[in-house]
Structure formats: structure tokens, C-alpha cells
Amino acid sequence: MLNHLRSAGWYEGSDRNAYIHRAWMRRGNPEDSLDGSKPQIAIANTASDLTPCNMHLNEVADSVKNGVWAAGGVPYNLPVVSLGETQVKPTAMLWRNMAAMAMEEMFRANPIDGLVLLGGCDKTIPALLMAAASVDIPAVVVPGGPMLTGHFRGEALGCGTDVWRLSEEARAGKITGAQFLASEQSMIRGKGHCNTMGTASTMAVVAEALGMTIPGFAGTPAADARLLSLSHETGRLIVDMVGIDRKPSDIMTKESFLNAIIAVAAVGGSTNSVVHLLAIAGRLGIDLTLDDFDAAGAGVPVMANLQPSGVFLMDDLYRAGGVLALLTQVKDLFHPEPITVTGRPLVDYLSDRPVYDDTVIVPRDAPLMDDAGIAVLRGNLAPRGAIIKPAAATPALLQHVGPAVVFDSIEDMRERIDDPDLDVTADSVLVLRGCGPRGYPGMPEVGNMPLPQKLLQHGVRDMVRISDARMSGTAYGTVILHVAPEAAAGGPLAFIRTGDIVTIDVENRVLSFDVTDDELQTRSQTPASEAAYAAPVRGWAKLYIDHVMQADTGADLDFLVGGSGEKVGRESH
Ligand code: FES
Image (cartoon, rainbow, N blue to C red; front, side):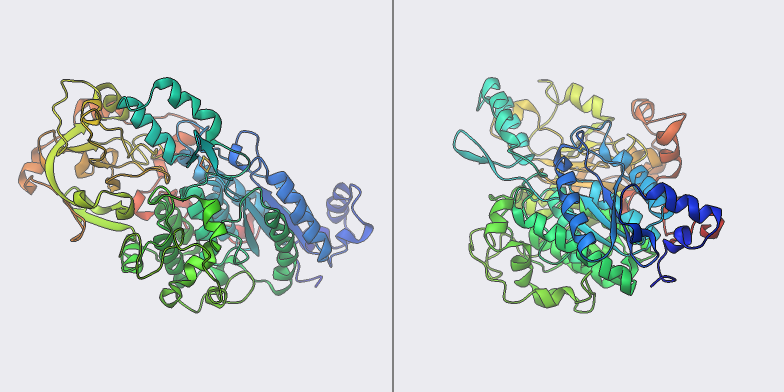
């Protein structure tokens, strides 16, 4: 065991450096904790009082620690960069790559043999997985779990989704402003992340389908005692994984990414999973493309009747049998080879999983929607692709032709969207540019732009919206996102004008506008959109826009693609 352990590179020997490494780490741990025979396990902990969805993770870390000790390892709490989706400005996505880069370097720089990755809120599991993939030492994810369901005036509240719904109802005059504000007290019931099938829930499912959690962990509510039991078990497991050197690259293969895409489709998961999966795959050198999402997701029915696509919430899914019971319904679609952290294939866990409530996990032969994986659209408006989540869209709008109403920036949209003189009808296509990775910067979740108030008041509840932005996983609507290349990178989105006729044909995967190639060549960007593009001169934002890739390749930084492995210093480059 001694020579196998990576941490022996710090602790082994009788020279001055080994003395220093050991002496400073004693701190009351058992005398033999650094004798070279015990795996040193870092608990990469995104607990933070400013990441409200992850505030409870210190308690979770304690359970992991107990499991590590029980299995003969030595645990260490390693606080890492944490991102509170609702709190950090301008958008948490600007900081995902920074978090992943900082985590990666600390995972590599420290004397650790294995990792337990504690995440929850949207960007935290993606950043942890990106970092662990680039270092490639044994690692397991502990998903922090969704919160229990809150209620307002007797009705269940889906956090996120119902914020959008209630705010639109207030703008439409269906409820008062005071009623809207009163719901704020009930929106967040307790510890855990958003209770819809938003990005956090989706990324927990992704981690599980990739094989990176103990199977059956994803979707366990944050307040459920079983979350702590599974955390303890994870602590034990990581010690075993170090012993046999089971690494992320042994678990996350091309086929496990395809399994994750199938799982996201089956649960009606967030569009944000696309950029995150592409980025994680990029760190592993796996050739995953947008087309893989369309191909692997094709024919997968949505069976999770969860907001934002359906009506129930994550606690209901757990009560109904959980994520594995749902995935069992489509077991035949999964690739059988990829293993999980336990060493057994994911499909081994997809049997004998009864469904206890088929209104929550609906039968495969009566799904919420057939063939509802994320669809990739292309055409002269999005040569490198754009995506839409049909399950969250209005079916009648999935084929649509209408005139564009173009906004040059988020500020422009906010200024004009409720203008009574805005020339817009229910058939119009709202187009927002300047919100891609480079333009904003950080690709904010503004793609589900609000509908014009005058249309809301006439009962319009959905319209086709197109942008180079992302959309919150808790949002819904006929919203086309991640247009690539983005406007700020010179994509055709920069040149569309109000009045151009836009064609959306999801069945045939088309997103185009009625401009000839010759006409397009003559068009230039509007001064307003150019003026709105971000132009940072220093710091992370400068590094970010100089190196961020487009959404169709995961919006990672170009120099972070791939990994440097576990070696430190000169050996790693
Ligand atoms: Fe943290 Fe929704 S804001 S998961």
C-alpha cells in the first residue's frame, strides 16, 4: 500500500521535507494516520453560507469523515470555491470554470489520494467533476439533495419554476403584487437545492448516470436521514477505491456520457446539462458533440412528471421510487458496459425497482412526451447549433414561422419589452443577443425572457424566444438557447433584424431566417449591440473572454480542455 499511495510522495521518508509535511498535519490525528498505509481523503466541500443550497454540507462532510475513518482512511475537509446560483453576479456560469480551475489545482497540489465531491447548487457538481476529471484520482460525488416541498396558500411551490409563474401572473394582473411577495416566505422550505427538476437536480442525476455516485443517491432529499447514511457509505467507498485505484477516467467513458444524456431525457432535465456534460467530457478527452445529445436522447420518453415540465417535485420523485426506479423503465436504452464508483455497471442497479406512484413516474407507454430529449437545431441562424427542450415548450410552437423582434442586449430587452408601442404579436419571435459566453460575459440564464405585458394581459402565456443565452433549469417555454456562434463572436445572430422572418422546425431540426447569404454578407452589427458586448480589461473576466469557447463545445476555457493528471510541479506540464 505504501508505494501505491500518492500521498506517500509527501509523507514518506526521513528527510526535512517529509518531516515538515508530517509535522504540520499531526494536529491531533492518530499517530499512525500518516504512516503511509492510510489513504488520505479530501472532502471537497462547497458548503458556504453564501451558497444557500449547500449550507448543510458541513453536516454531510461529517458523515463522510466518519465513513472514511471507519474504513481506515484519513479524511480532511477541503473548502473549495462555491457558487450560489441566485446570489453571485453577473451570473454563476462566469465562475464555473474559475471554480473548476481552482479546485483542480488544489486537488493536485495537496497530499491526497482520493476525493469526495460535495456539491448541490447548479454549478457546483459540474465544477467538481470537471476538476476531478482533469486530475484523475479516485473520486465520488455526494449530491447534496433537494429541499422538501414548500407550500403557499395550500399549494405546493416549485422553487424557481413558481417564481417565474407567479411573477408572470402578477404582471398579467392575475394576482396582486402583495400576494406575489407573500409567496417569498414559503418558496424555500429548508436545506437543500431547488426542488424542481432544475439544473441542480439534473446534475445530480447526471453524476449518478455517469457512474460517479453510489447508485440510488441522486434525488435523496437534503433533510432525509438516508442522505447522511449514504454519505457515510461514500466515505467508506472512497477508501476502497483508492486501494484499487479506480479513477474517474475508468468510470466516465463515452458510453457513460451517452447514458447520462438518456437519463437527462427521461427525467426531462435541464438544458444546462448540455454545456456541463460537454465540458466534463472535454476534460477527459472524450469526443462528445451536440449531435450525441440529439442522437442518444432520440426516442427517450419523459417519464418524470416534475416541474418545470410536469407538476410534481423532487420529494415526490423520491417517494415514488426515486431516480433509479424511473431509469429502470428505460433500462434497455442504457449502455451496459460503463461501471459506477462501486465497480458494478449502472444497469446492474436498474432492476427490481418498483414505482410506487405512477402519477409521478409515469409509465413508459404513457409518457409525458415521446422523443423528448434535448433537440439540436441548425440553420443560417445557428450554424454550429442551438438547443431546445421540447418537453418544456408549447407543442404548437415547435413548428413556427414569425417575424423577429430583436433586442441588442438584456438592458435593451428590459427597457422595451413592456413598451405599449412595441410592435409585437403572439406570432412574433423574440430574439435576444449579446448574452453568450463572451458577450455578457458568462452566458446568463436570461433566455426565457419575459413576455410583453400587453400580450400577457391578453392571455398569451408562451412565445418563441431565441438567444445565445442559457435558461434556468427551472424555467419553461418555447425557448431556443445556446445559439452558436454567439453574436459577440460574429455569429449570424448578430445580423438578424427586427422584421426578418424566422423559421423554427423542431421536428426537422431547423432554425433559420429569411436572408440570403449575399444579403447576410452586407449586414453589419448594430452599434448598440457592439457597445453592449463585455470588454473587461483585467482579472478573471478578461482571462475568461479571451479564452472561453462557444456553447456547442461546453463553454470551458480553451486551455483547460483535457487534464494534467495527478503529477505536481514541472511533472504536470
Ligand atoms: Fe441553488 Fe436552484 S438556486 S439549486
